[in-house]
Length: 104
Image (cartoon, rainbow, N blue to C red):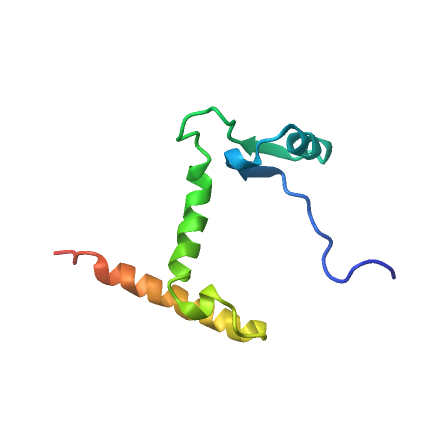
């Protein structure tokens, strides 16, 4: 059998982007690949709605970058890096639970 190993890649349905990704060529290429573009136009005001979907991911990555071993990947093995990710997520959850006020 020929081809690449693993599962075949799937094309995304939608692409979210900010003003930096706005160009005719880029939109034309996305249309050719039948991908719906959600890109803010250059002269639109802030709060165009794109941040609602992306904010959660960017915030989580920023929280994980507090930990040096996750900011720069030193480990070659995936299982070790995944273990550090789990530890980082656990520490973030612990901080959030400790910051909440008790239910009294």
